[in-house]
Image (tube, rainbow, N blue to C red; front, side, top):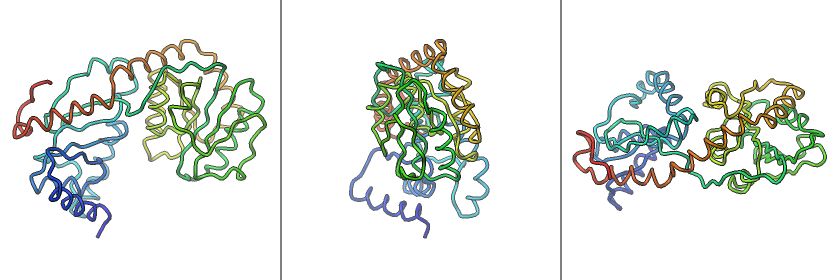
Length: 303
């Protein structure tokens, strides 16, 4: 039995004990999505990164998963909208796409699921935050990033995460080192995030109006696409994971001095906070529940 099949059985048992109008399901739990459709249970598909990345991944993974009896791209009769916990392309025009819908398969961008305020650092502050997962070459990449900020006349805060022990890297003097810090404590004081392109951390920084310098750690993940989206939106830049410390240092100093990029990131942060991700997601789910039998038909009325 695969883990997702076990989760599917558990989900059915929970619904039997606690009936629900709509079940929210992670987009990667294919077996759970399938079983909910078979038992005529309405559900919403939750995506936690850029929709275009997941859509392209489904096209690749579909034939492989189909051999295991798992559908990826097949339509599901009882699915409500695809609820994306993001903003399209990290670009300001997304605010024109505010329509809510209960139409099956329609993509609805909810926004950032994070508390955020406008960043107002007392002094130039660079946050270093790479992955909590130990990707290949994480240690040497961390070392190059740390060497890049050595001696910079800025405040530097590094969150090493559980995947890296402090003794595995040489930390220059003057750098604040933490294993972990909440985003809503870090980013209100930040001028720049140097990260790996993880969707959650990147979107949290942007929600605070903080530019992002992305060094993707895994080329098959969403990280390179997120780095390109950040650069295309003009709210940061993307570098290769093999970039040397001197080049990273120049990118940091150039980004900190870029008033246009900082203003663009500030305006994007204002727009993301206006979207009110948690409230918007709740509206979509309430609309889907209220639609009842109409979910598989036309557009439900707006709340």
